[in-house]
Image (cartoon, rainbow, N blue to C red; front, side, top):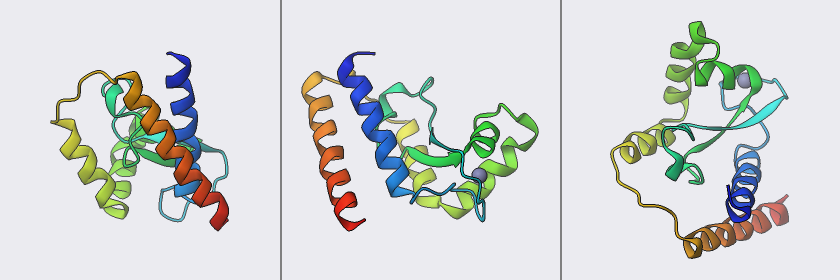
Length: 126
Ligand SMILES: [Zn+2]
């Protein structure tokens, strides 16, 4: 990863923590070991990794379930998250089929700027 890509990953992570109000997205979960997760995986869909809709905040346990590291719980956790946050999963379904070329550096810069603006607003609101 280039430095710009690392910066963007960091900004996307901060954005996700703020946007999900520092809480696990799983209904009624109060665990606090929160992680920045992706609905469409970074491995299979690297070009969607910095999208707002693709970031979800999960505790380590639900992240492990969601990504299939705890395979027995994966299906139910995915179903419950989809039911609770349908818009995010609809975006993921839609983008799964879409083509996306390689990010140009000017696009990466623009995206980083957008996240900085959003984060400034979020910080001002509290
Ligand atoms: Zn959780």
